[in-house]
Length: 274
Image (cartoon, rainbow, N blue to C red; front, side, top):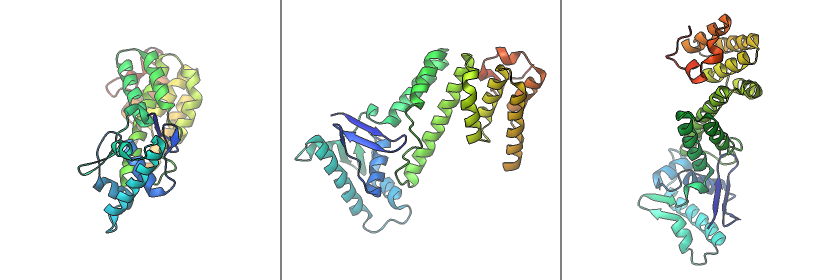
């Protein structure tokens, strides 16, 4: 059996090259939550909360069982499983809930997390090119907002928020590695878009400032700082963090350390510009 579940964008679900994704909204939610937690027990309570929030109907458990049965029928059809036994093994009933027994590499979420972990390990070992390549590969698995075509209750909402934070963290690390590899000019377009999309994200703005400075555009780097400062004051009532203010002062002074110090030190809260 070959399974391919894609959640990082529009949802896709295929088993043995046959689509198994239901058209109805709530069965999609059930399949999505089981897939994002593939290999884990997803409790009946968690599934009930996902589907109906804090006010489930009296028939919630029975209705959930009906949705699971519908999913098993689709899986059985894809497997050519006339008895349904294999489908029950793949979408198993376990004590307190259900488990979708897929291998980790069958779900793009888990492939992305594995690549991010390997990329982080490579960067920690000083292998910037390898780490950068792995993070590029992980980020390439996103085809848009996670589960963009699936209704989301509280449980899927938590999963989507968590994955978005992981994606942003991996993106920052990948850009940091690109900067250390001297790719500042190639990053300018991407960072311009990212700072517009995340107007209060200080690390992305700091990376944009460094890339601009190294590309010989110190005036533009100072404009990025002024825009960030204005946005933070207007929206949050705070000044930029001390590390970003130190970076601003270093650009004003034309500090040569900007060209020599690895970006992870430039952005470190413990680093003090000379």
